[in-house]
Image 1 (tube, rainbow, N blue to C red):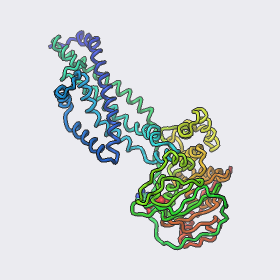
Image 2 (image 1 turned 45 degrees about the horizontal axis):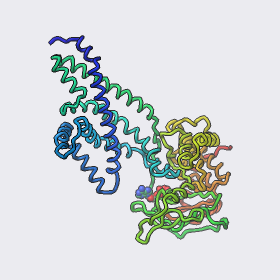
Image 3 (image 1 turned 135 degrees about the horizontal axis):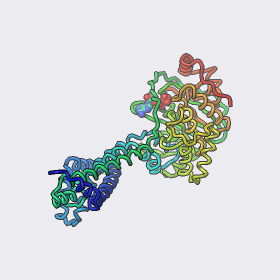
Image 4 (image 1 turned 120 degrees about the vertical axis):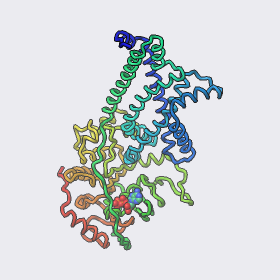
Length: 513
Ligand code: ADP
């Protein structure tokens, strides 16, 4: 049979074909949307701990992944009327396609959610964002970077999968083409025209996907891996130098905090008071529990036992005698937690937000400030921290030192009563350590109450009102910088300081202001 070019172009641009392609497109879009919504419902069920929802989600996935789509379409077509559900063929088809898409989307969404580092949730919690806010403002936008490419792929597949609805006489592109092929007796030209429409729609999908991916592309680069070493053992009685602590009530008081991580007693019966305006530096060998102690103080790691009072109020859930958490006012707890800012080793900036937005987001969402005011405050802080001109840069476009200063500015913007710094310079290149230490020194001079975990002994000496030495989860010694550095009493303190001296005889120079 000869190829009829006139017929081909006539059919290709005919209103019938255009209408059939439009029908295909909206059915595919609707089914993809419904399938994605089902995926968003099922993915948390798969990831959650409760067994029944997890089992039901798994059963759904198992059935719909295990049977061919055409079988599902025909099954719904045959079974629904028997169950008394009189749906149109179109609705039946949409139901089948959407339910078939749900499991694939659930897995894609699950992978996307897993791909967001737990660091991001911790940073959100430390800023006082609630769980739903954290999900929609921090986790989801970042998960979308992983979700969009396979979603685009699935949508292309969905456009083609609608052709299976011709089996139940839904009048989409393939069904229309079949009817035209029969009535004209020119299947070659008709199916070629149909193929052109499918390819056109899928090409548009690919262009749209590329556009969205480009916009989402600014990803954070995790440059630094932190390796922790196990600590040697040598407990001795704690050595506590007499200190001139203020007589007023402490800003934060922790009593007998204990935290077990795996088989390690990371924090072992630690008690600690932090007074207004005090700068406390926590030192000790790697693995001695410094970071865990810090994270217990703001409940990023809920302690197993012990109690914390913040500004004389009980802070955090108390434990019942059976060891379980007693009921507590979560809103009040979140309000209290906002009083404690935290700066992390690896910055934990929100990678999908600019420097300005990293700061402004918490001001708007947590403190309820107007957007324009929040942006101005963010810009002012960035300028104060020597970061003017970087307002619209994304974390991936900043150096380590700049990222950490944005992170400090973000934390300070929430006007916390207490700032915790968890080895803020350990993930930095040596040349940028000084700029971050300089920023912290300025904060210390301004009277900010700070607890800092660091190995920068020169810095500790210059800013610390009090130094706490930890070993094997316990505070083994504390005193002023002069007492600890000039006259360490505990043998573990002496060996730790000697070790540091041998490894890094010259510490970083803090730039003059
Ligand atoms: P430091 O900050 O002094 O280096 P950490 O507080 O990070 O010490 O760790 C204290 C101890 O807890 C170490 O022995 C470490 O190996 C252990 N630890 C830390 N995190 C975990 C974890 N997620 N699971 C099990 N053990 C952990």
